[in-house]
Length: 247
Image (tube, rainbow, N blue to C red; front, top):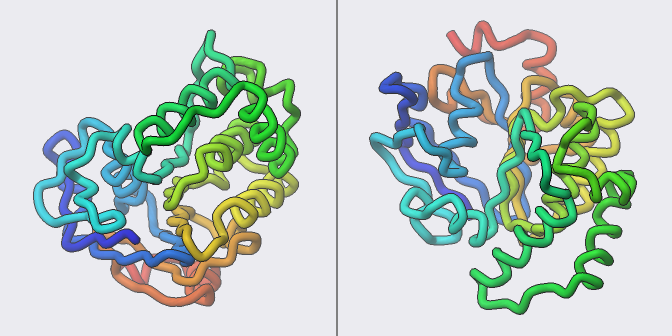
């Protein structure tokens, strides 16, 4: 589904990614862990198409298409979802309005008919229920006045409604308490653990992986993948840290 080969990228002319290669197949969940400054968020932004992140070498293909040649909205319409470490607030725009417009824009790009208001609300209630998010919160401006945990649950509701093929989740566990972590983990499993979907989880800690068990764990250090393994690798990192692996 996603193939990254020898990816190099810079931010403000500073090299961050330095030859990163990774392959993710449909039906797989991959976790990327690593020390601060290793390039984890940069990888997510490059794949999502955020301006200011320049690819200087290498390639990334998504479902056989050149991902790096697509605009951000084209990547989203193709089925890529990027969950942010710090979801932004959008004053004056209700969640319901934002999500319906986003979904119908993607449906239009795929040649599908837009969802009616009634069908959309039915879908929104279903996905909000998975994340234990009250429907009244979907009537409020996007993330305005939300706690950290509410912002992350709201973002997972967005993911459920948009129904992507590939979800790239950048430190979704950041700011979550124990209860919210369980709810978010269960939501990721319910929405994305399917044979035709894939997930790239970026995290510092093992705790999210207790709920969303990955098929593969990778260590990102110095701008490249330096070690890969199964779920046991995350436990090893939790015990021993990154110092020896990242050296």
